[in-house]
Length: 387
Image (cartoon, rainbow, N blue to C red; front, side, top):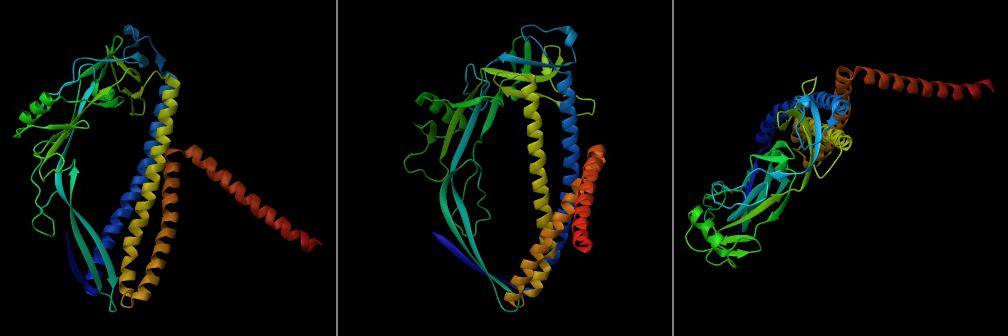
């Protein structure tokens, strides 16, 4: 089933919207410039903290706690076990020997899908034809049906949502680590529910009727093969871990975040037995990856911002759609050029602020390279003249 809606936006309304886009685009450009500058500072601070930590860390025997290491940065690794049993407090499902119990909940709901096609008209107006279609799907998030364009596709509220229940702490030899940090390293494995356990879950949720267990899911439906709107299915997973490695500050029996001299907090963790050097190398690689991802995201944001600011030119030219397309292509090119000028400039200025020695070295190398190219070109031009 589908529903089609046709809307027309006048040229004056589009110009008004484009004026608003200028303000939004300006805010986006300014925000992304700040993001790029902040990212360079974050990257440098993290790099320096990791270098400092790599020079201070010492690997200790986890079998006992040495008071001499109190407050120092230490590295431990080995077999790890949970302190207690993780329990889903709402539904009562537990996993002996696990570090966490993960609950996944899905409800059969209506989902609205949109497909739009916009055509520009002579005079600058736009005609948009939108087709709304509706399908039934299992979804883990509650789909708000109040904004659906067609009535008769109402979704009820989800009676319960997914959750993660972890142990408070875990023990690695004589040391204790926060349970949430350890659970993030583990591997998930499905908990196979029995019919009795599924019935217990049904009662805890407050549903009527029994549940069918299919592929690890407890399905609460009159007909699991043909689910109806508002039917639920619940799945549980246990999080297990055998070996782990941590780098952090020793505080009594606990391993917590270590505060570096520049204020950054260091806490490294990996599944398995990993030495301290490899953990710091991995952390540096992760810092580099995050730096580049934010750089790319900031540059994309600047480009989108400039494109939004210049979009009014394309709207004005859309009085003749063909001319509007040409102008829009040109404004896109201008937005790209401005991005390539401003983005690297912001990063370069941030480098001068956060890495003055490196920045001066790069600028000096670039100046020498440019001078060398100019010298060689002049030399080649002088040879024919001399001949």
